[in-house]
Length: 617
Image: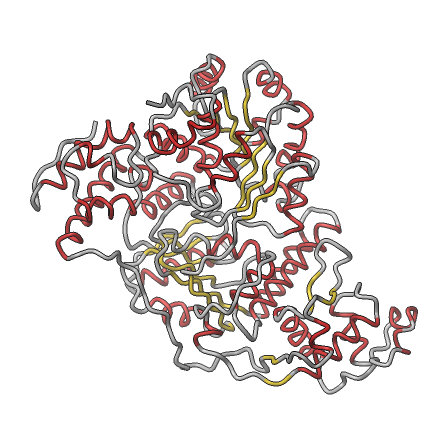
């Protein structure tokens, strides 16, 4: 038997930890390579899609190596949920944070200092103080794990400066491996994180960004309240997230949905903490609730059955969008992400970037990330290809986005694309779209005159299209993969490996002349696969098990998934174990849950409808 309190020294024990503590028979794709690197003492940055099991990648090595692992987490609620889940699995975990009393924090520190704790969670603000770092230097630290590591690169230094200060850990603890995890980071962000945390010397694992079960769709904004209600038709009783740009709109939207018969709750940073926490707990524990939120909601949210994410306004960047839609369909079943896209949103997002308290370089990068999202919105072809291309992947058309399911009429834009590529090449592949458009339309700007670009053969050859049309065409050329934004360089656009084939006439380019969908136009939908493959009697049992889980979660004050995931309950309903040995084979049942929960759930499985089950102590 593996002792979760002390761990073991041999890497061979990783499989025992996986099974006996966490109840899993095998690692998910991408997990084992990260675990092995950490067991070998290497620094690691792991980029894994939402729901891929990032936490397990540092929890298993922590328990295998022994000693104390410090986990850096940005949100109190996130660390509290993870600590509770670990304790339920029999792991000695603690957190030191602002939500706890001073006495509780002191007791947590004394347990860690006394060697009782395996994983200690804290925010970067608490970790990166001279007093804490000096105290930790006297303890047997075996690993630092940085959760939501994209915050190091993408949160402005004026917002959470201590995230950037995490770069000091390597110099203070040179022999302690650092593990960094995130679900969303393009190549530039990955390099930035690795450079700041371990001087670029660590290993970077990218497990793939595709979430094929999420159907992607974008609409031009036109009476957004009506569009939201149309989307929600037939979704009564489903859990979902609606994102809004402002706190006021969040409250307004939630009220509008309630008026139209939906169970909706607002969530934003301006609410009283108790009300906000109550809404989050209801969303995590109850069925069929729609949470209407600003981006204050979402990081670390682990609810498997979110069936949709709807953006009433465009997010801040393509990375933010990817992370936000990743909260849908974590159970692997069909889910949908829909975004409304308006010119007013674009202007507002540009203003937010300009008003941010950061340097010019960061603002420039954020503008280019927004450009990438706009290119996604205007894509004339498969949206998933555009999304994954941004993260360095090149998939085939997905068949599960609005452009694949309901293709729009495209115009032949090969000549326009060739002209654009010629202008980009002739000007040195270092200017942004605005300058390229000025060259194509024969603009008489000071920059053009100084650089002599009015003497280029392409100068003035694009007068047939307006500036706005060229902006859309160029964004769609980028979306098609013939040009790319140089986010990490000078912010210009440059040619790709596909460009030469287009210039040679071996490939064609087609674009959308009208990105506004017609009202009332029928939209094809992918087949819905919301329900697991169970018989009627098994569904009745599953419903009873979910209610039991909800009761236990409310008694403990934790999210329902901390008790058992939906997958575990479905496994119970399908296999219907009647002994402890049979219950031990259920997905997600480790030794602690076998000891503490088996009797309660076995009684529920054996009981008829309405039968009493043992109370949870």
